[in-house]
Length: 218
Ligand SMILES: O=C(O)C(=O)C[C@H](O)[C@H](O)COP(=O)(O)O
Image 1 (cartoon, rainbow, N blue to C red):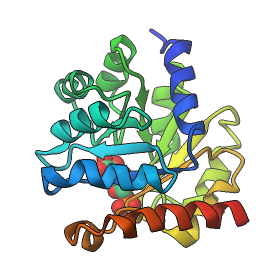
Image 2: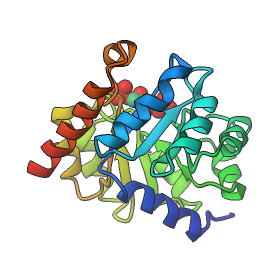
Image 3: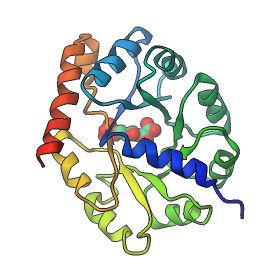
């Protein structure tokens, strides 16, 4: 079986180590992409997951990459080869899938940018682990067992590290980060829809800053 390159795995490790928080960003209005991402970076959070949940995702990746060189931009909700190629062309520095298929795991090995595959079960993990993947998004984290599931998965897979995402909030993030197999935590709580709709970028910066401060105290 083909194996993912150590270079791709190194790149993903560096991304996950660059920030304890990874905001999950869904762009409803293309004009919001840049000020929103700038606000997060100003608050100290520079690894960003911009999802393809809306039609504005690709354009947002492109504009943020061009205007915010200090940010590390990943593309989320990638579920097909076609989308993988599109996010690479838009300039994404890594891709994230909510789950795994053999097809996407194999395709990602041949791609230019590395994949952070999403897993929810030991079976998902085995599919990717056998191909050399060691870094994963754990999704949907809260409903798939939260920190107890991560502790349990650490038994059979002690050399695997996670970015849990899904249902995590500011006050539960630190509990996840205390797990030995968690490098960073993802979520949409860093970009509340009401603040974005009001274009209250100062509030976004403040949430990023206070979330980081809370982790530093924990
Ligand atoms: O869109 C995707 O590709 C996903 O994998 C799902 C998101 O990462 C989570 O749904 C975010 O979870 P919340 O923080 O609970 O909003």
